[in-house]
Image (cartoon, rainbow, N blue to C red; front, side, top):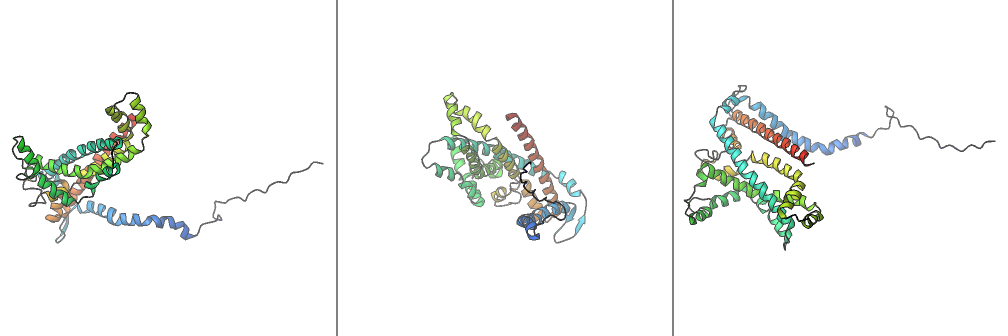
Length: 318
């Protein structure tokens, strides 16, 4: 006689058809309800105005007059407008003069703060964020005084070396240097903290081992610090590019007269300031919207170029 072992009953089959157990309706829609406020606010205050800008750009749109469909005439007029190309050149010049020094200074400062044996190190690390939280209006007033032609500290220092006073606010390159200095001063601390936070995650043993192998400070900076910060550097380059091409507040506050043109000769008028002048100064909403579309395309193209270059650099670093 053969003994048979008791068999364990098979678990019930889980059906995936219509007879499967379904969650209550409120539990199924709860995840979507949690994320809905963001998408609703983004749609109302972000996506809808963005799409409406493309629509207005096709009209001769006066907010207190008629709205006439004119197709691409606003874009044709814009590309033939020397003021548009002047604003484009000013924007690119100020962006380059502010972004490159800002990123380099932030990178060096983060490297120093990560290695220096400082008392009150936390205080120094947090104090570099002061320019970022300072009012832009206050920054503009201070820098306008520092770069003043008659009583500015910078021209006083230049006079000690026999250099004639420079009217920074009224010359093309002088105003670009002034605005670039304001922008770089405001953002270098924020960027340095991003770099410093990333450097804190790099094991200290790597630097110690490099020092034992004879690597000096510059070699450690090139072969350890920069490669370790590559993702953050790419991020700051892209964000600085987007922000630099949309600079508005600094040139608006620089000139006390003709502030919509940033000087009588438009020597520092940026694209956003030109958009503001045409749209809200002269009530040419259609033309201003066309300028905004052109600025959007420019930002997308430059960001895409940065992304492609950064992807190539990232691939070579592996």
